[in-house]
Length: 205
Ligand code: MLT
Image 1 (cartoon, helix red, strand yellow):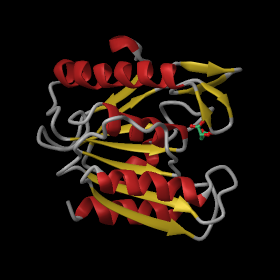
Image 2: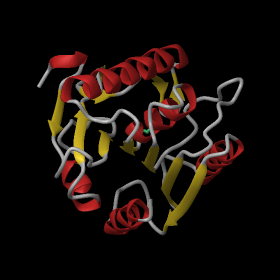
Image 3: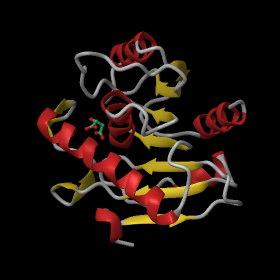
């Protein structure tokens, strides 16, 4: 579907009160990538899954980068606002509770989820961030009191140095978020352990 400004998939949840999972794919992915993972994490949830609008060659992303790990911060701010507007417009259009949206992001998708949490606090009730790094450092830092965040990173991730994940975790904690960070033995690729961890974390909400 291409309405509301983003190509996206929307699938209603088991009932009107079901939480919404905002799925945010990695570089080169599509709006379909994380659907089976979302179904494994929370089978009853509503799914809202946009495709990133920035093209790097033929690869879709959620914001522009200058090189690997070096982000175009003006574009990141613009794209973060644009994604926030999409979530709010989708809530009105599909009639779901805008206060009950949890992001599930992988890599570039986890980075824009982190940016959404930091720049547009209140849009997300929480976030599951697989392989995230620091997208930007807002000044001042927002209050994220009451916001649940799960970070899952790989100990031997060649793309995301552990120190980057630790800095992001420290920033979320400084903002007052209810943060859990877990380390996987592997690298950048998602594993069944990530999925099991996310399912358990969401169940405890
Ligand atoms: C990014 O550009 O967001 C990160 O480097 C991760 C990725 O390559 O997607």
